[in-house]
Image (cartoon, rainbow, N blue to C red; front, side):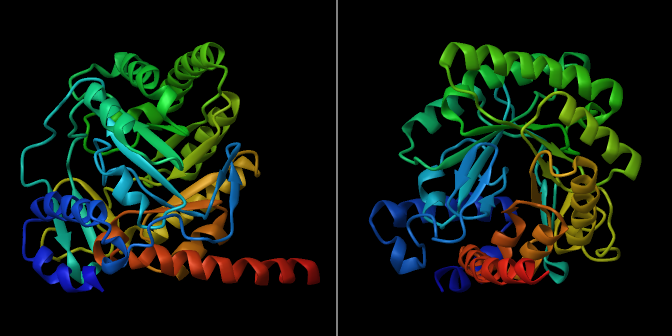
Length: 353
């Protein structure tokens, strides 16, 4: 209810200004114990628990990376009821990202276009924020490279971030799919992805030996991939013992928004127009992986039916971001409740089959 009342005001503001106001406001309400008054559950919503990556998720609905780039709002986001939270993308050094304006709403299509460019305060500030958080649930940390690091040295940045966040993460996501850092998506290619993952896996193994704790690795991929690229990525992920794949990031396509205001802005498109494209990638990826590692589905989830579609396509978990902007925190409760109802029905259908 609170978000439904606040959304018209927020949508009159520049999207990034609204973002910069909304999260601190939720944080203030949460700090004074008023979370229940504004519709926040206060803890993970009880649902159907999910086992993936050697972790237990209280429910299947997570927050996608990008909303809390600096790990400043972990505790208040935990009150939304998510089964897991992913923060970042964080880079080794602070960087301002691309010039403003860089975030655009397309309300008619329930979509966003962003060209943020991994704006963040750097890994040192990020680590301090995460250490200060009280959250003890499943926390994913999404890592990237600085914009001015040559692509041939990208692995240096990923390893530097991994080393700094390793002790704090439930899992670590390697973001190689943002369209807003020059040449980043080339790291998904066959000649680049294998050596990159080999280097990151060696760093993870070194940390695992030192800490006696193996943190799972996930890789986040783009939706703008053909079948051959998806199959090649699946094989490389299995070869290097990656623990999960997140599908997908934003798209460069403008299907579903052509002719609408802001549709021609540069950047990645998210929200409802991405749904079908993302689901198609999940389906192809799940078939290529043959159940050997879990897929986390993200892209265009604005309802419980959208989330179920991702699971039916082969995802084991889902994440939301743009849907949260348009629907508010109530979306999390809606999806978790629907998936909890669906699970017994699915079991009965399987028993009858």
